[in-house]
Length: 219
Image (cartoon, rainbow, N blue to C red; front, top):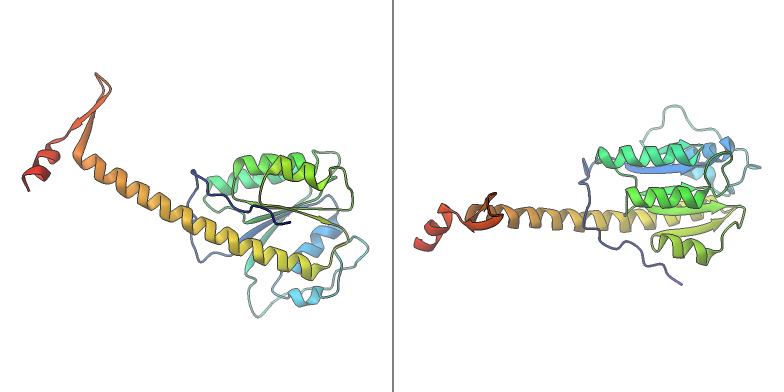
């Protein structure tokens, strides 16, 4: 079945710049897996064609000076706690992540589901991929915990599938942010118009017509 992706959030930080690359976050305790992610979302993703996302696969080398920059900016970390702090800082700086790829087992720290829940609490719009070789939780348990915007993929998985799923999720994520930014601008405009007509009195905690209100009536 399909997942109910991307409900609108009432509290959204604006994106710092629409021209910036899409930010992705990969969390895995295996350095080899993180290296594969780096190749997959590099300016040369075709190098990963046919490579499964598994520690047995030796990643191909990346050119040191690619002709074109990647459309993605990928951060990689080895523990859930570090990932949570990364997301916190991203939200505070208005440079949020679009997608987080999270391993399930990451000893000695917290597991993938706990990591995902903490990340979702910080950024309701981030899309989460749980990618693991282990079934510590059922798909139903993961979906019930995270409710929306989550995809469970079992290792090994073809790299081209991950990239395709990522592109689809990023497209939806961008649409959601555009809608929320429009909503915020509209709300700000409405509040600005209201402030021209009303004043707030601290003594009795009430709004009263401002001097501008009488001017508007006369006009």
